[in-house]
Figure 1 (spheres, rainbow, N blue to C red):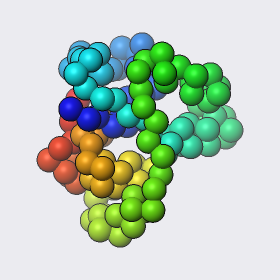
Figure 2: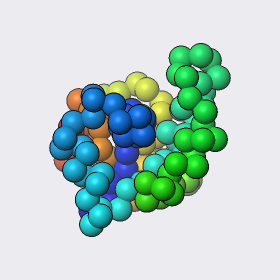
Figure 3: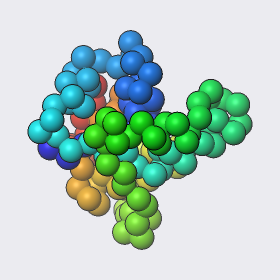
Figure 4: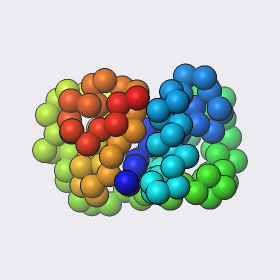
Length: 126
């Protein structure tokens, strides 16, 4: 299965946060799954770090991706165009672009956000 991590899932995984459910851990640990981290998430984390809302070093975080066998997913034009097809269930621009990427590729979006599951049956709500 090809899985795209929502930003909070990525952070919880890298910080071994207890908020990350066992189900989510199993999806990420399963070597049969291809795990993707979007540049959207890295952008969101950097913005929150710069504003003081998040205490993290994005450069170090990026260095951790290969060690976790995470693949990077760049933002492509078709992802941006797919935004126009999304209903307004969710207003967060980062989440909307992650949703557009997941639908376009296609990937299963691993998230804890119930609103994201309104967009696609391929959402993995954990």
